[in-house]
Length: 87
Image 1 (tube, helix red, strand yellow):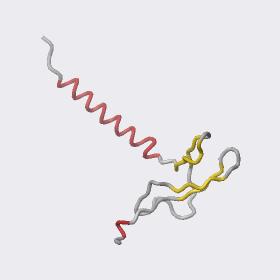
Image 2: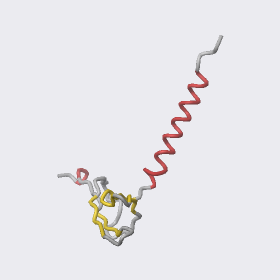
Image 3: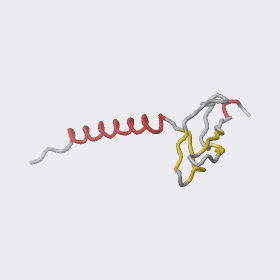
Image 4: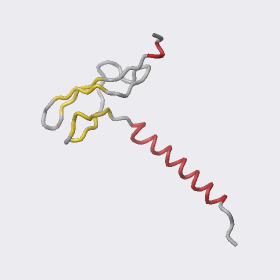
């Protein structure tokens, strides 16, 4: 196997608001590893289902939606400018 074929998926543990510890094996990975071993990360989870927790990823939460909004604004503006003239 080549090094480039390896994907590192984080495993993280956290305590929910009840004090119960959960260990999560993330299905999202990267190469190189995104978090060094022993890193402290922010975790997002629903109180109703803490087993579906994920590491807070600012790119997915904020930057990606902003990029999509930017493309939408560009497309909307182009559509408005290039629309056929009314007679």
